[in-house]
Image (cartoon, rainbow, N blue to C red; front, top):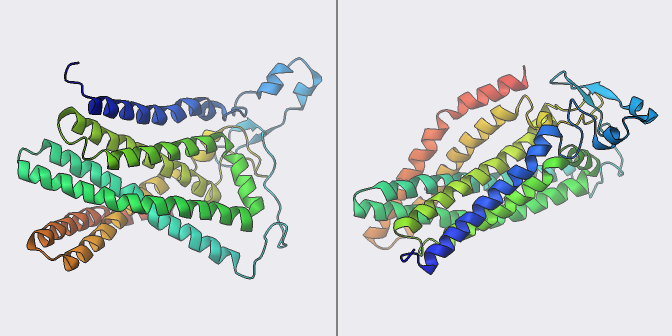
Length: 342
């Protein structure tokens, strides 16, 4: 313990806090995934019914069949709203609502894809620097990873702002729809929020702790934080994909759109896995292209040969990563479309 400096202690505590934030939502969500997160599981009665099992009201429990899984579950939610083309369901503000929603969604998707992909690049490149026996190459890899995360940090702030704008757009222009979707995924909404807080803390500690965690055990803790960061980011993406998948291929509800108590069925729709694979590959290809464009700009703006060489190499690595993930992307897209039209 004599070699345990305050910086090392701080790093270990920071890593422990991030791991705790990662595991807390998972622990909290386990009952939700198993039984609907406070709502009844597909095969069991809700808590209030269980308490009144010996009363006449127990006989009034309604069951229905899942439209996708074809299993029976206890009706635990209201039917999907029957909307009409009027201001109550679709408020109008002298502009096409779908265009506004598309703009907000598309911009959030652009930045979200970038900030999910770039930390994966950083994790791989930083690890390559650690295991490299050539000190000069190790330093180059470390600087490259630092440049990558520096770009990502700015984009992360914009992603959070655009996410808030997107939610505001849903609430303002499509209140009935968003209310229904929120009622279905209520058991995991708090998990999404906790993961977002955990990701924010992790990425800032990861970036600002770079110089203090350069060597030895501290460096391994630092690269471990990048693993935690990517696990959180990927989980966030998977949860967001479950909402998209539910919109296009509902599951966990009956033919009237009533929630049947099993949140895992609503998450794991027919399109969830194809969406996850397609978005992950797309994020990596998109992120590689954006970083390559940034490197090209910095190459042209550089005034020394050393800087030009660095940004030329950065652009080469980024483009190589982008192309590597672009090649399998059409196959993932084919799988997704095959499931859409199945």
